[in-house]
Length: 555
Image (cartoon, rainbow, N blue to C red; front, side, top):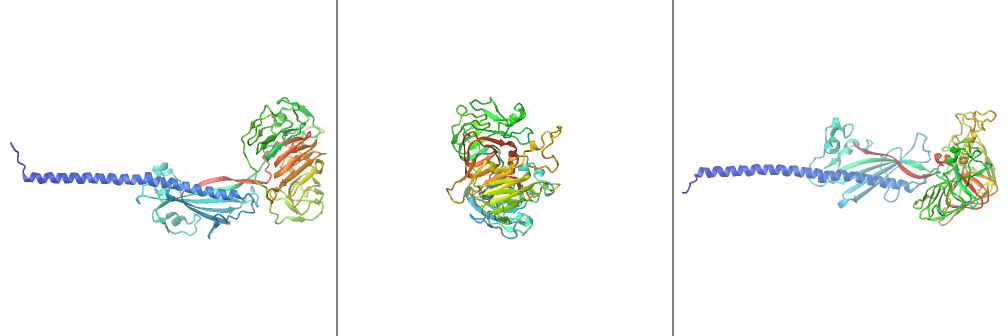
């Protein structure tokens, strides 16, 4: 039997079908819009957000590398390799330099603009002649996809607590202002970051920007071991040894102290200075830090070494050498050449063997420059009569060789920089200072007064060795090697920082010191004693820069 469908029922069915299609289409469109927006957030905006920080950090690295290129504070122009003077108004006090790097990252979508400006330390911590730098980097990532905003604080870092002022701006505003579809809103609010040139600036294409700021400060060298040589070590002599002591310890070694046997390491000559009291366990502990570092594989040893040894590619082992500490043959390092200091404003000394410096700190010494050094120089204490600070500091630059006698009076700390070679006897280096441990030894013992009364104005440098410091300025002619030869008779209390010098120690001289050089050679029964207190006193040579601060500008 056939059923007949009325014509009115056919129309109702068509309307219901059309309505169903419309509803499903609306649902599908809404899902598609939400999926597209979420896709923009996760695959586009989130990606660009992270990449903008990568670009900013790449710019920060480029700026930091530029700062590290020139360790000489007097030659930091930043005018090559795309760097140029920052446009006005530049960061103050300045000067400032800028560089833009673009077209890197996936499809060349990233760019960064870096600004470096020179700062001045007003705390006295860093010498006024040594600059430190602020590095500001703006990283920009091109934003692909539909111009839809879906980036929220809650999506990233817990909503209103993302930054301190996000609560007053509302959820999302903190990060949304980083997205610029048509205008740079940061410039519209903050200008260059310092409030200059505020105004909306159009952008070429939608983008996300993030900003970071680094502060690079100087890193100064300290003697952290007995010897650090770049090319070759050959020593001590077959009857000599290398050990350490601490000048702050009241029981200090001195040339008249007996050598005592120590069975910590094997060998026919395992003697060391332990001062006048060999049973003093505190001092014995200080004697094992005569560390030797060699930046090459060239290592030869005569007498024992009381400390650690490192080489770069050597084959040093405990079975073949008398070494008390650890051995590591895989420690590469370099020491940068030592540039001549800027002598602008130095007193020009011609002849005359006596000077009387009155400088009151390592960062503000009395300064002198010699075209030729006299054969006999006495550096007197120009502040000896001061009731508050009876100590003086001098910085001397010698454009030539050092071959004569140098005397520094008690209370004087002298830096002697020289461009030529050095050949002296131990007795020619007359350092009349004393160690802190000797200065205040047995202050309460009857009949044994301290050599220098301990007062609040006592010398801040505890080490006798640290009062006489020699700096070998690296030759400017490629392939030229400086030489330093220290001969008997007489013992030496001085440090040597000469990264381009071959240093030779001969005879039976005892040297209380720390050395940085190109190479070292010691023969005879030379004794080398490293003062551990030097590890706490920088020698005024800047060897690198380091990042002291890293922040992101979240405005």
